[in-house]
Length: 86
Image 1 (cartoon, rainbow, N blue to C red):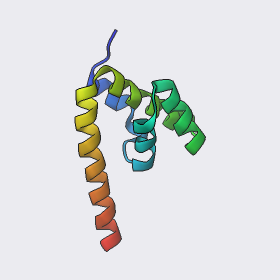
Image 2: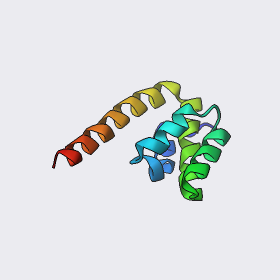
Image 3: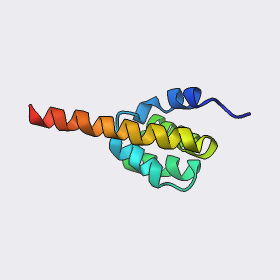
Image 4: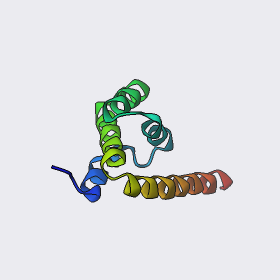
């Protein structure tokens, strides 16, 4: 059963504010590899699971993933730049 992109994003929310971990997922080759990479970086099982779900979005809904990833990372980087200006 394929899950909807919205459900998968909800399951990914633990890392959606973390550009570094989202980038690790983007570099991974499989959902399991994403889990392993995020867990090795964070030591947090919940974040590792969220990374796995984000990789599942990439696998099952590639167009939605690419659109979300590029827009979301750009927004996070803008927010970070605004915070540094203050």
